[in-house]
Figure 1 (cartoon, rainbow, N blue to C red):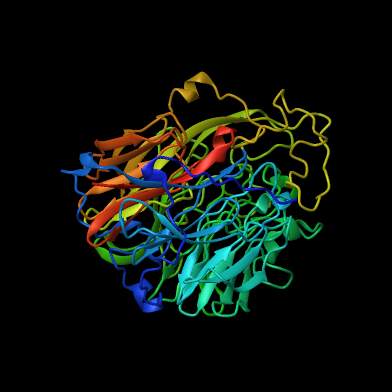
Figure 2 (figure 1 turned 90 degrees about the horizontal axis):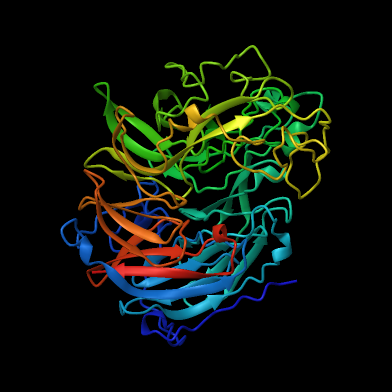
Length: 592
């Protein structure tokens, strides 16, 4: 059955959609040249630029006047039940704003007036919510622009091209396997191609990225993140079972792209089954890794694996920020990011994947005694062993109960300010207890379309009293010892120097979920938002809060900025699945 979306017309002037008559402003085709040379007034891709800086050259909003920000207008994007998150990131071209909602509906708004978003057209792809999964819900993160097309995706695995003037369908292609595979990240336009990838590796299957002809939707190449028989890396999976066929390593966050080298840089997710590494002995390439692909052919250029044979559900999908900077007196072409799960800030050479340096995000991080300064791997890693114990934390099959701490960042992107050579991100440290499996532990077969736990919870029994549906990091989970919990610093906004990896400044932010990404401006501001409804602006030098407003909707999506007729706006989508209530998704737009 289809879910009947509800769209509300709110009486307040600030929320009016207005007429849906043809209001399209003149737009130039969105070419590779335009996307390679950012236009400050436009936000042509979800993270702003191919290098993932999430940094704007607009100058109207400054530390001196940001306190005057107000709501310019807001637009409802539909009302949905729990399980439908608002994670969409708008794109803007010449006063036209394109945005989606959790049901994969696409909207085009004329935002020229600066006082309301006037709907030009709306497209409903009629996604069957039965393909959603109770543990994930449905989500949508935005569209790509290519020429005169809007390239959208659906949660049930389709890629759809729409005419940007009329919203009419140009093509509709099924690229992922319904039920077992999903698409949750925005397509990326590169020349006459659009790059897409799959998600939900916890359901089993193999992660993949694919290039489609943007004009026709025909597939050009497809790369699988888990090598098949005869391919390099296949030997890192067990030979006595078919674990590689359901091994995960999905690509659920958009890649960065290096124009000069023509390389795509994807982060891959955890292996599946997430908490049973003994079922899949070996390093399990290319799970929990960064993979570099030739954009024209999809061929692997290099890889870097962060935690081989990990059993913590530690995705490594955080977008990589591409930076040219001086390190130890030498100019290096590097990539930098806060790990999505393992608690370290990494810098790699993006030309070959060589490890440069890494530092822990928080003083509480102790799941490993440290990283090898040459390889970047955990010092406990044993290349001669097919199973990595990581001091007892990685095993659910026997052994003592152990505790540890890590830290997480978010999918929504981290911002880079080139004038300061700093990466800004929200991080949250957490401590957990891993327990051995219960005595009646049993291996379970893989079931198509269901979360692939295999043996982590056996026949559904409890492990040391922990309910089998506890999906906190490091499950089966339990409280860590008080002395370990006391080392936590809690949610922080941090600024890290790329050259050294050292945290320059860090401030506590909020006890609520820090699931949004960050945005910066050349005037010295950093913006982000939180799960309790706050949107905030910080001074980039000191991280002092300069402005804040609570609009009541939880946030999981990152903010963007654009300008119309010289006036600058900050925009962000709100309304999250995390509050377990029926929620109206909203697009909030602020200006001076």
